[in-house]
Each structure stands twice: as structure tokens, then as C-alpha cells.
Length: 566
Image (cartoon, rainbow, N blue to C red):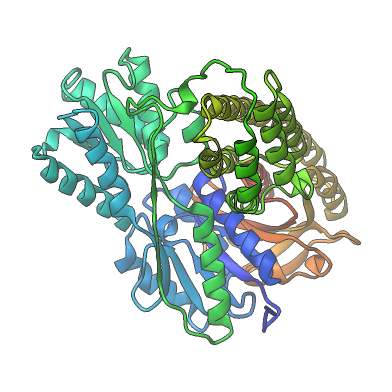
């Protein structure tokens, strides 16, 4: 699909230091790539947030206007969580004339892509009551201004009514979707309200708060799930890696980003768009008290598969391969073409020959290939689930075949979890080293000329996957305005050698980006609750917490220059 104006679509989010939002960005980037469009990612904080530092980030939204973008995808569930859709809707009017789609929470007058928040929470509460017999179920709410948080709370209350349980205000604690508020919720329940031993389950309105609650419960020697079962909502990557793994309602997070971009692209072409409601899926793990395949490994059972099993696999082969590819969501490109067939053939080989471990070795080899890029453990596990689901009918009629199949896939699941955890630790070490090198380089030339700053930035940011960048400081940070000054920048073929006046609102259209590919990211530069300027970077990678770290350092650097100039 051609992009009529040649301008990018803007994706408005709160921050890149958040697994949920990075997953939305990943989905949006994937859709933009498939549609042949470009993307401007704007992590501009929450609208009218009461926290000054977050509110100051709103300066990045100044870069989004009819002259710089062809459409807007506003992740309303995060940028509007402090005010709600009623106040966010008039704020969105600033983008009048630009086609706009909301993601997460609908706003009057705009197309929307949202998730069924109610069913996911309701199913989890009913599961705790009916399957685990929990009678006293606490709830950690989301931000007061969040529609999603209100819907999830209403679903909790409705499920309690269906269970015949009382809605006890003492069991309800305020939260803000951040991990520390989950920790604080446990302290409130146990310390302030004296409810230790008087609630058997805790439902959090999102995974981060659930994970914070689990950590605090363990610190207080409260066993999860035996004494307190815990469930969340979202299914971020860290939910699967927690101990115990978190039972949750899985949002199709990347699909939200994808559908948002697709809708905005259609609107930019003058085509009508119908709002969409995406389903959630209950994901049962260990934190609710259920025993799952992720919690143990059955012993190996030698087996020589019958001819009937092989025939069944031949008959179902194309369906199995298609389901594996679908579950992988196009994320296994680094494994090379035909990875599905290699895995399936290795599994069939193990079923045919007692004592064979070809599937384990083939899967390990695939993981090493995928390690070139960040591995999404949820996608890996979903692929293995698809392989299991489609393979079970092939082994149903042969004694011992199912056990052998389950053993092989359980071993693969454990290998995937361990490998992803180790890969995450390696990436964290590498990220710290990249950040340290970048900071040292900029510090050494901070008070030098623009040319030396540009050279240092080009060298340091290359490790972040940044191929072009411009950094500008507002002329008068204490006064609302658009006038700014370019401090340094670089592109694929040139570097900024002199400081120059500019307009902050046009920063993403600077000539330095003329030959840049990938995604543009507009980073707000702030300090002490004030907007200082902005940096725009073109990156070939999915922007994440790495760029948040660079943003924080550049903010400190601009503040240092500002104070020195006084």
C-alpha cells in the first residue's frame, strides 16, 4: 500500500521502558513494514499527568502535526490513563486534519481497536473461586482515569457476585499499572489492614502489579500459590519467567499495534474503518495453584512408533506446519526457511527411534540462530503449543506415543525458558556496556563544538542500531514555545558541524533522515519536571529501554549545558 503523502504514521505511547508498550511498537513496526509505510514512534508520556516528569515528556507530541505525519495511532490506554477518554478526546483535537485511530480505549469520534478486558478478568476470578475454592479474593485496581482499569474492576465485582461472594472494600487496593504499586498493595493488605492469612487470592489489573505483589508476598514468607494465589492481565514476557510463572489473561498486544497501523493507513487513504474488539485468552500457569507442563518434566519413555503414527503425521503434515508458522508470527526469520519442517521431522524421528534426542538438538540449534535478535519467549512457547496441539491426534492410538511426545515438548519448553533467560541476561550486560560507552563519549565532548558532539554521538549510538539522529534544545525551556537550537546530529553521509536555529515541531523532517531507513523515534528530553528539548533517532531495531536510557542521559547532558550557560 503506497503512503499517499510520503510522511510517516505517528505512534503515540507513554514510554519505551515497558514490555507492553514495546510489544505494541513491535506489532506496529511489523505492520508498517508489510504495508511499505514508515513510522514515527513518540513516547511522550501520559497526557496531563500529575507527575511533573511524566507531564514534561508531552513535549515530544509537538513533533506530530499535519506537516510531519500522514496519520496517528494513539495508544489511548496508556497516554490517556491519567485522565480517561472524556478528557483525552478534546486533547486529541490538536491533531485535527490528521487521520487518527485509538488503540486500547475508544474515544468519541475516532475509530478504535480495543481488547475485551472484561472476559479475561472474569474468567480468572471464576477460575480462582470454582477450581481452587478461594473465597477471599483481593483486587489491585489500575489508575483512576483508566477505562481499562474500570472495566477490569467491574468484571472482578461481577465474577464475585456469580460466585456468591461478598465484595469487601478492605480487599480492594488502588494501583497504577506499575510494578511498585503491586508491592505497595501487599503492604497495604498485610500491614495497614492486618489481613495476613485472611485472603487466599489476589487479582491484579495487570501483570506488572501482579509480579510486584508476588515478590512482596515471598518477602513476607507468604507462599504463592499455596497461601495466596495470584493472577494478572496482559501476559508480558516476564509473566512466564516469574517464579512461579504467572497465570494471566493474554492480550494480543502486538496485534493491537498491527491493527492500529492498518486502520490508520486505511484512514489516510480516505477509506472508512470499523472499530475492532480483540479477544483475550486465559493462560493457566503455576501462580494460581494449577500444575502445568512448565512446572515439571515427566520421565522419558522409549518408544518405537508404529507405522500408523507415521501415516498420521504424513496426512496432517501441512496443517501442522501451517499452525507452527502461524504461531511464530513471522518472528523466526533468523532460523532460515524450512525451520518448521526441520523441527517436525526431528520430532517424528524421535518418535520412531527409542532413545533419540534429535528434536532437542534441532530445537537448540534453532534457538541459537534466533538469538541474533531478542527472543520472545511467549512466541516460542506458543509455537510449541501449536506443534503439540496438531500432533496429539497423530499419537492418540499408540500406547506410549503420547508420553514420548509430551516429554520431548516439555524438554523443549524448559530449554526455551532457560535460553531466553540467559539471552536476556546477556542483552542486559551488553546494554549496560553500550550505555557506558555512549555516555563516556558524549561527556568528553559536551562542551566542545557541534562537530565533535556529532562525531561522538554517531560513534556511540551506532551500537544502539541508530543510523541518524538530531538533538535540539528549546530556546526558552521555561516558556511554552517551538523555537529551538540544533546542538548536534548525524546521518548516514554527513554530520552537523554547527549549531543552528530550528523549530521543534519539524525536527523529524530534518535532512539528516533523508537516507535513513527503519523507524523514527522522537525522544523527549526533560529534567526537574521541565521540557528541555527533543532528540529524534532513526533506528533499525525495535526501540526499547535501551533508547530510554539514552534519552535520560541526553536529558542530563542538556540540563548541564543549560545550567552552564546561565
